[in-house]
Amino acid sequence: GAGTRQLLRFPDTDGQARGIAHEVAALVANGHPANEIAVLLRTNQQAEPFLAALNELGVDFAPRSSERFFERTEVKEARTRLRGMARADGGQDAYAAVEDVMTAMNLAVPGTDPARRESLLAIRNRARGPVTDLVAELDALDRGGQVPRPGGVVVGTIHASKGLEWDTVFVPNLIEGMLPHPDASPGAELRLFYVAVTRARNRLVLTHQGRHHGRTVKPSRFLELLGQLEPLAAPTQTRPTAGQTVQDVEVSLAPARCQRCGKRLVTGAEVTLGHCRPCDPGTDPVVDDLLAWRAALATELGVPDYAILTQTTLIAVARARPGTQEALAGVPGLPATKRVQFGESLLEAVRGAAAP
Image (tube, rainbow, N blue to C red; front, side, top):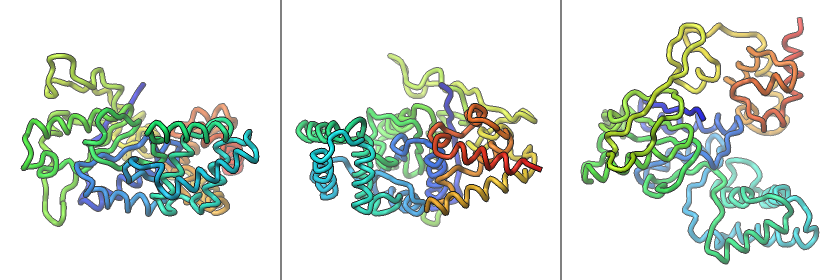
């Protein structure tokens, strides 16, 4: 399928962490599974600003190793509660059961005790069918020394990502002195960079910053190997074939273009809306009405506004003026999960906003 690759520059390290966190929050709000997003770093010591920024936005993340998963206190408590539910009503829906457990343990709200909540999200991620099946599956995983996949955004090291893939991958801190690191061999650093840029199935976002710890820094020399990165169709080749080196791998670009001027579209918002920023047709009064609808619904549900739908998606909805669920399905950036949750209410808001 189609995918995107982007290269983004931020003014400094803190701005980079906040920018990536906001992009991740928007993806999750639009229905992107959190555990299909990864932020890959050179070392664990670089994780703190990203974890803080994600936590501030209420985004679930998986900052810990999965080792000793079943020895965690919250996992033991959750399994005890689930066993009790299975004995009382074995046919109860497993997903609903885990949701009830999370509520009982005060872990239902994003941003609440992220490390403990991540453990419960990992269990919820396995929940399919009746609760008895989930209890049996967790028992089998425990006996086999396996662990459930994390339920939140993965924030980890490039080294630990070997052999793994995610739908969307962010690789920050691509600056000289960090990747490549001056104390490591160039060949080893190049291989590490290659591991990082081949972890994404659909979207890869590479980022660097202008200043780090108060000093000016240069972009990583490795970025030159991939050339200018913008939205593209699926690359014709993402891994070397036999006898080919990393330097030989070429990326085939097929960038999305503005429907008005033909310019290449760079950001995710531009791709969703179909035009570049200079060609923005201006404020649509329907957008203001939809933003008011979103704010009221977010207040009612007790969640941040962006957890309903992003502003970019609302602009796309306003432009399409959908009148039916079928038409709503054609709006870019609006996943099926959000249509099921908010579709009828959103259509009613569109009709009300468009009425004279």
